[in-house]
Image (cartoon, rainbow, N blue to C red):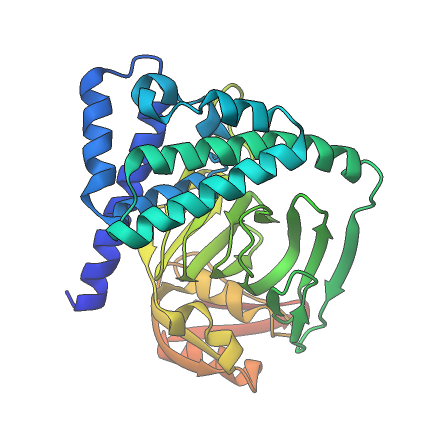
Length: 364
């Protein structure tokens, strides 16, 4: 395992620990031992602080932090009477209190090199106080402000780079369609068909979501590729952290979800979330460089990608779909690429149907 992989594993472990703490702190059965353990974990390293902040933001738990039993956990973090008077004075008072708390916390961090836990929690309480007022005002404002909606499409053989109003960039692959709905509260997109690579500008207050088939993707600011196929949707991450969940599940069941970090991918189909696998940036965004890169990829999956570029789609006959394909193929001539794949896997090409090319095992 190389140093980068070791670093990724350590980062993933901290994020998993942060998720566990968020769930435990919101439990009604939190114990004194839990409280001491959480304090020790937060004080152990700056990386733990960052992991907790990141997961709270990613899963929308910043608002939920105001419901944690902070007064019972750390009595010294309870706001003073003067602070309560300030926060009760309206939005400007809450904002002033938040700015004051933020400045004081910043001074403490400069002098000690790390956060003191009660100060950090008090800062979180100020954020929650201001957020409650800001959200109420924002909701009134949103009722009067229309959602900005745009639709972007590409034809077969065409790719396109989109610059979104928030500073994010999307590269849209061939034969794709993307719908963008931005409001002052959230950034929602829908990949109707095709494939897109997202480089999302970080905005903590406005999460960025992508709906694609049976997959829902939620981020704050990161880079990832979404590939929507007839049978599934694949999500590959090249930077940051991405939350992927099912768009629906069986009646009465909570949709499954998973957290992906750099060089991880997952597939979401009618049967649910697949296993999290390793990937690479070269594999995730090979199409941007005019190539298709396969590494022990089932033929059925390879053809799903190639079909975006073919005028006549191709399919695998029974007995051929699970054959594994490895190699790098150019996209300048998709038909020649299909022939090369058939040759590499020792398959016959049947073009008798003008609307479909069928790849099947050669008869003995």
